[in-house]
Length: 186
Image 1 (cartoon, rainbow, N blue to C red):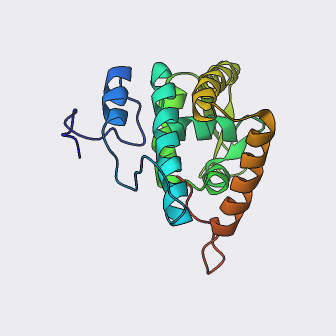
Image 2: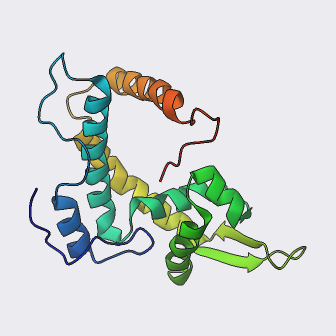
């Protein structure tokens, strides 16, 4: 493992400077890593390794906007333009509600999301994507697209569609705990 470049890992609830994110993403993360996958490699290891590399590339792409993948997930979760309770949003994203508060704080500070009390119950907070947030999400999607081009270089459009289909099946197989609870996605 490489030496740490920064004094600590950026927290999931705050953005950091692009330089810090790129330093962070250049380190080796916990988790599997492989340069090539032979036919004898366990498929779970191969998927985890590819997922880890893809996550690092995605994180690096978002660093241009000083945001992290969790911020992207929140903006994407609000893209329908409707108001959502924070609890509903956290549940739909698989993000613990306590972590969502910190993620929202940065997005609200930047004017991308707005939060207000529910008129029916002051304990309930409602959040929605602002127009500025929609513009930022479009920017992030373009950045993610460039990352995806690198990720899928050498694949045809049909290959990409098949990869999405197969990964959807794999995800559905593991997205629920044996007890029936959704797996924490983030």
